Image (tube, rainbow, N blue to C red; front, side, top):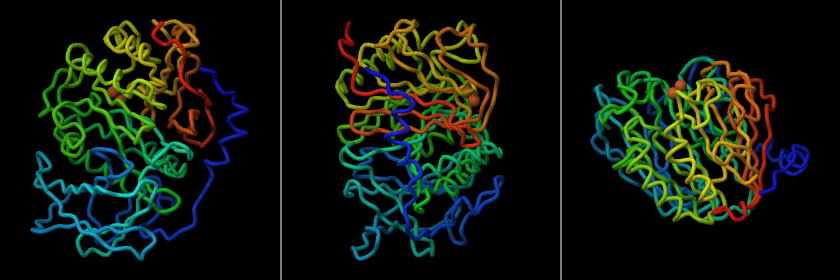
Length: 417
Ligand SMILES: [Fe+2]
Ligand SMILES: [Fe+2]
């Protein structure tokens, strides 16, 4: 799996990052906001954001949280720009646990890939926009990833920086709101920030994909599903029965979303599911895993964290050719070398992290973590760009400075060896 040089990356791809489409933005843009505030348009529902329960090339799920007791709520949508027929889908509300609020959810299906749509809630005056994922990866696809957010000014600044990259979606790998399963108001504040700040330069909402972290649950490790009431109230569409799952984008991208022991043990049933899941996606052009607690921590001692991942998951990542693992929890920026059995190997798996969207900690010296290629104490997000069989991973610090560029192309040969 040849790696791409920084020069080749900038020569072929970076120009695409700055692309800003012209177009009408019907919701207030995050650039209009101060770094410590969120802006909800008058009449707009609270905490509105987009996510997915199944193939993002043809579906989207709209969700929000509020108290209104509306008997018959609908989401109306049509192609954007206008001219197409408006269709209406009904919304199924359910409790937002430990509050008097309710989660409103509408899944829209049967959409056209690579297309833009607009939607509105009931007869409210705000019109939102989104796009479906392309049918194929022949066009460049970008997404941002990170973890360990919260609602502080640093998390807000990273939201705004992320939105400016015009990503198709964001993948957040745990510790979203730091609600600890006990503070639904913190989770709603996180969604309120996300929904109003994660709007791309063309005015489109940026869907969120997430996996569970220790601060989603009350009790951190070994909790039941009831221990993560806020997180699962909005993500149980994807995580219906388990707190791990997959999201497949057409036939070109698969995200394997894992629970690093917070509700589901790393070993046993989840590890067996992981092997089956990866085997079924053998040959997928772009295959990423995401989990919260890192297999190869940058700040914590590897004797204290990640041992279960390294024992039960990493051999499977290596065996089935996972293209990168996105991990978090240590609140730093880090990239490992390609690793096999914990040692540098050009056919190994690279781990990107370590969760500093809005939280920060100093990494250990590189000399004490020989698996790390680089690490720093920096708020950051990673911008991923897929072009055909090429993958670029660009770490952006809070200032917008490029901290790291890493790229790979194709699939590793003889990866069963
Ligand atoms: Fe964290
Ligand atoms: Fe964490």
